[in-house]
Length: 216
Image 1 (cartoon, rainbow, N blue to C red):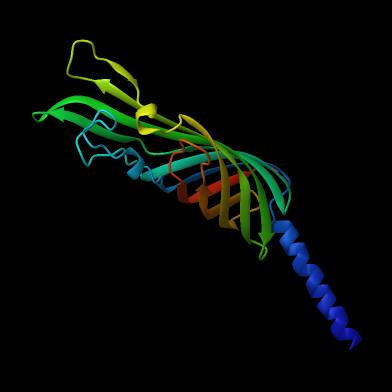
Image 2 (cartoon, one colour; image 1 turned 90 degrees about the horizontal axis):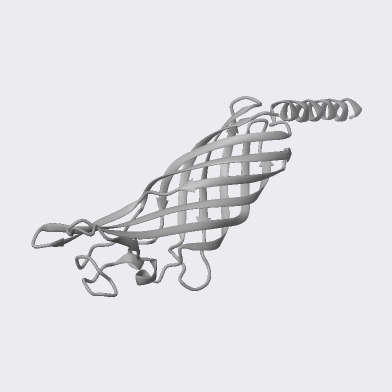
C-alpha cells in the first residue's frame, strides 16, 4: 500500500514538474491574430435614397470580413495575464450613383483598442483554455466624398446614421491555446464586443487563429 502511495506521489510530482517546465514563464508576450469579424453594421447603415439615408436604396456599409488583432501583454503566472490590443476591422464602402455614373463614395472605417484581464487554465503540459474580460474603445468613422463636382466636398456622416464615432464597449473572449515551446504558442478564440448606450454601432464577433511569443 505504501509503495503504491509513494509511486502515485512520485508520478504526480513528475507530471507537475513537466507542466511547470512547459508552461509559459512570467513576463512580457506579444500575439497576433487573424480571422473573420461580423460587425452587424449592415442594418445600421442601410441606405434608402433619402436625405436621412443617402445612397442607392438597398446599399449599405457592411464591413464583415477579414480582421486582424495585435496585442502585447504581461503574464504574471500560469493562470493570469493582462493584455492591451488593437483590432483592425475591414472597411465598408459603397458608391452613390446618378444615371449610372458615380457621384460620391461612402466609407466606414472601424477599429478598437482594448484592455483585458486574461484567466488561463492549463489542461495539460501544453494545452490551455482561457477567458478574457475587459473593455474596448471602438472607433466607427463614416465619411463621404463627392467625386462628381469641382468642389470635391467631403465630410463625416456619423450623425446621419445615428452612430457615435467613439464608443466604450465591454469585451469578453474565450479560447484554446497550445504551447509549441515554452516561448511560442498558437491559439484559436472567439471575441465579443458589446457597445452600450445611445448611438451605438453593431456588436462585433471576431473568430480568429493566432500565434504568440513569450519573452519570459
